Structure formats: C-alpha cells, structure tokens
Amino acid sequence: MQRDLEAEIKKALNNWKNIIVDYQIPDAKKAIAQIANSFLPYLSLWALMYYSLNWSIWITIALGFINAFFLVRIFIIQHDCGHQSFLKSRKLNNFVGFICSLFSSLPYKYWAKVHNHHHGHTGQLEERNIGDINFLTVEEYRTRSKWKRFRYRFFRHPITLFIVSPIVYFTISNRLPMMNFRSMVKRIKWSQIRNNIVLVAFYGLLCYLLGWKKFLFIQLYLIFIFSIISFWFFYVQHQHETTYNNWRQNWDFLLASIRGATYYKLPKLFQWLTGNIGIHHIHHLSSRIPNYNLEKCMRENPILNKYANIITFKESLKCIQYKLWDEQRKRMISFREFYMQEKQVALAKF
Image (cartoon, rainbow, N blue to C red; front, side, top):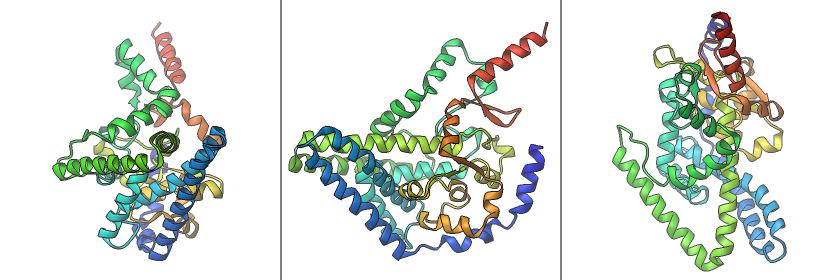
C-alpha cells in the first residue's frame, strides 16, 4: 500500500516544477511590508518590556511571550534570505539576513549553509543529524547497549528535547564551527566567527546604553522562548508519524518534500506570526518560494495538499511520543510500541 501511494504521488505531481515556478518570484513590496510588520511590533514590544520591568516582571514575561513570535517572523525573513528567496538581489538578501541574525542570534551564513544542506537531503537517513533533530531507527536502537539506550531516551525526553537542546543549540552549536562542509568551509566558518564578534559587540553596546541586567534579561528571555518555538516546529514538521525517510539509494526528493514535511495547519493568526512556515511541504518542494507566497501557492494548487500530512496543533501534540523510525512499517513509533514489538517477537520464539 505504501508503494502504491508513493507511485500515485509521483504520477499526480509529475509536473510539480511547473506548478511552483510562478511563486518563486520575489515581490519587493511584500518583502518591505513584512520587514515593517515584523520589526516595528518587535521593537515596540521590546521597548514596552523594558519599561514594564519598573512595574511588574510578570507583565514583562507575558509581553515577551507575545514578542517571541515577532522574533520568529524576523527569523523567517533571515531564513528566506538564506535561501535567496526573500528579495531579488543577492546582496540585499545577505544584508537583510545579516541584520536579522543580530536579533535571532543565529549566525546568518553558517546557519543558512546547514539549513540548505538539510533541504537537499531531508529524509535521507545518512544525513539525519544535519539541520534536523536526530533520531534512531528501530534496528539501530535494538543494537544499542543499555547505556546508549539510556542516553538516547534521555535525549528524546521532552524536557531535554524542547528546553535543554534549544539552549545548547543557541549558545554552543551555533557559536562554534561544528559542521565540516567540503565546500566553502573556511569562508563559512570565518563568517560564523565574524557574526559572533559583531553580535557580542552589538549586545555589549546595548548593555552599556540600556543597562546590562535589563537588556540581557529581556533579550535572553526572548531568544529562549523563540528557540523553544523553533525546535517545536522543526520537530513537528519532520518527525510526525507518517513522515518519509529512506536511505540515499532509494530516496526521492518529491516524496521527501510532500510526505516528509507537514502542513502544520494553524489558526490564521499563528500562521501569520510564524511566517507561513507551517506550510512546510510546499516550502520543501521549493525553498525559492518566499514565505509570503506560500499560502497563495497552496490555495491555488489544492493538489499539493491532497497527499500532504496535514496536522493541527492538537494533533501535533501526539508527535511528542514518536521516538524511533520503523523501517518495516515506514512510520515513527514510540518506545512503548518498540518494547511491545520486542515482547511479541520474544514470545513467538517459544
């Protein structure tokens, strides 16, 4: 049945390149509007957070939770610039993307390089540890020692995955040149180091002007909430139950995009606040479609949703239980399912 579905998708979407081509053209007016309606609310709320510390820290925290979503929008602009899809000019994309990186704290070119690698290899089991949240297959977990199983279970625990990991990712993984790319490796690493230096200088200046306690409390809190939102989206977008994974020799780009990435169907407000990134199946089909064209592409081409994994926020909460990729059943399973399978196999031997 799985093979029949995959064959049907390939046949129905054999002209997918023609479908998406018109939506890949950047629109300067839409881009400028998004810059305005992302940065202006973010900076306004940031200022309000700063003054609200004089009244109540709880007001500041509540405002920060809202403002973190505007930081998500700023990051989506950086993300699109890294794909060279936000504006027509490469120089403008790189300039705007770099400015955004000072707010998101994620080094522009280094992160873009890692993320573009993810786009070219999403769903390839050989490349699952680059640009995505790592996971094991059932067979890999089965052959692990008790200690290594414990380490993996600890890593996949929700607290580790969505609170500890974002902190490590933002404070360590993106500060040090940890990925060794064969091409452009020196240029990318030096870009990351320069980005870090400018970021420290920028934050240092703001600490001096605004007071280091207030500035760091507000900015680090915003980045922390933003990082949790980001990790949650990365997880839900690719590690849903019926995702797509395969070894390179059998991997297919179309299937990896349509089945391997979800359409995270959120209320309109949250879709807007997260820069349409929930329309992830179309984004993976073409990273050259700017985020402000994704909804239009989806609306005008319903065939792209016919085979997508569509999940709501309530349904996405179930994704927390998925821990292992079952190559036999072509789906993600929980630890509970794994041990039930193991028990059944053991009983069958007697």
